[in-house]
Image 1 (cartoon, rainbow, N blue to C red):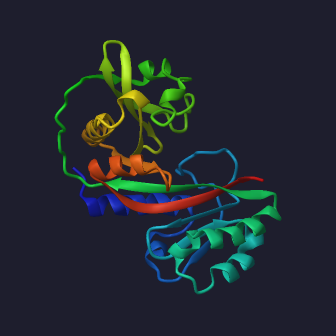
Image 2 (cartoon, rainbow, N blue to C red):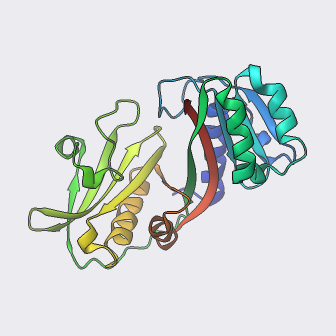
Length: 250
C-alpha cells in the first residue's frame, strides 16, 4: 500500500516529465519557466504540442511554454506568488498575450490525490463491474461523459468502471482511465433522477479502493464551480493537490 507522502513524490515525478523541470522546482519560492517539450511518459490529452501550460501545488507556479513568450512571462509572473497567477485578472492579461500567437486559454483543472486509508462504504444498491470490453459498449452515451472518455483512446484507455444498477439500468457510473501506467483518473456520473442519494460518493469510493488493490494510484479532477463533484472528492478521501491550466488553438 502506498503512503501519502510517497504518492505526492510520485506525482511530482510525473509533473516534472510534463513540465520539463525537476521535482525540486515545485518546492521553490520563485516561479519557474521552462521550455515546452513533449517528453516521453507524459499524460496525453491532446496530440498538439503544448504552447503554454502552468501548474501550482499551492506555492509557486511552474510554467512550460514556447520560448517566444519566455521574456513576457518573466515580466508577467515577476514577483507574484505563483498561486495568484491563476486569478482571473492575471489570466486575462495572459490571454491577451497568447492571442498574439493564435492561442487561447483552455480548461483549468482542479485536481485531487487520495488519502490512503481503505474505507468500505455500506452499499444499499446492486453494483456491476465493467472491464475494458464491456466499457466499449458504453461509449457514445452522453449521460456517462464524465465517467468515461468520449471514445476508446489508446494513450489513456478506460480500464475499469463500476455501476449502480436497477435491473439492467445504470443509475450511476464511476470509471477510470489509465492516464499513465501508475496514475488512473476517476470520473463519475449519476442520472439526474438519482442524485442526492449518495450513489456517486459510494461508487467513487468503491472504485478508488479497487484501483489501489490493483497497484495503481487513483486521482480525481473537477472544475472550479462543480461543488457537487468537489463534495464527492472530499467524502471519498481525496484532497486538493494541484491546479493546472493549458492552451488551445485560438
